[in-house]
Length: 194
Image (cartoon, rainbow, N blue to C red; front, side, top):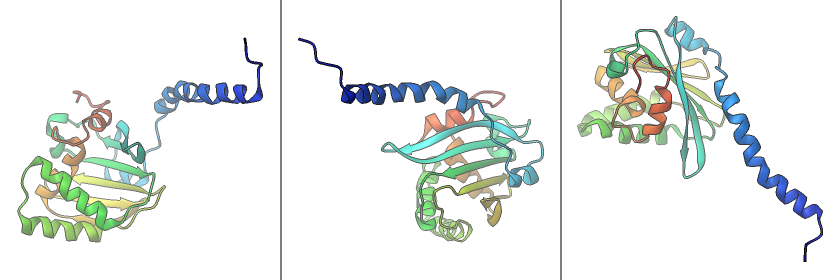
């Protein structure tokens, strides 16, 4: 016995087909290159997009990340060349939470003395404001000197410490990152791979 065709069945089929339709659109959307942010243009003339990816946590979209760098970028020496990491947040976060999570992730690359961690945590709390969904943050690495922070294109702070700068950008670019797939996506267009 066959069931008569119903409106419910039509809606169910349409809902089941929706993910396939979205998946078909994703590659086309992924190929579009976003414009160079003004702060990246002024801080890193000649920078280009190397790669982008999405951070999710327990299926929740946290942020989209983009890595900008010049032609001298080298994956093996990412900490020795100017670069910019742009994060576009999908949800809001308190600056204290961002700073504490950053210290936790930086420790993946090696131990950080407690007094240094406290100093860095306080510096990040001053440099990082709270973020809301849709906010765009950009960290610019000045190798061996400092990390500069922008929110929605406005400079919010600078931390002048070479070790901090190396470990902070290592959160995303070090081989010890907690998010190797995101690292791979960010480095997809790097001259010498990931």
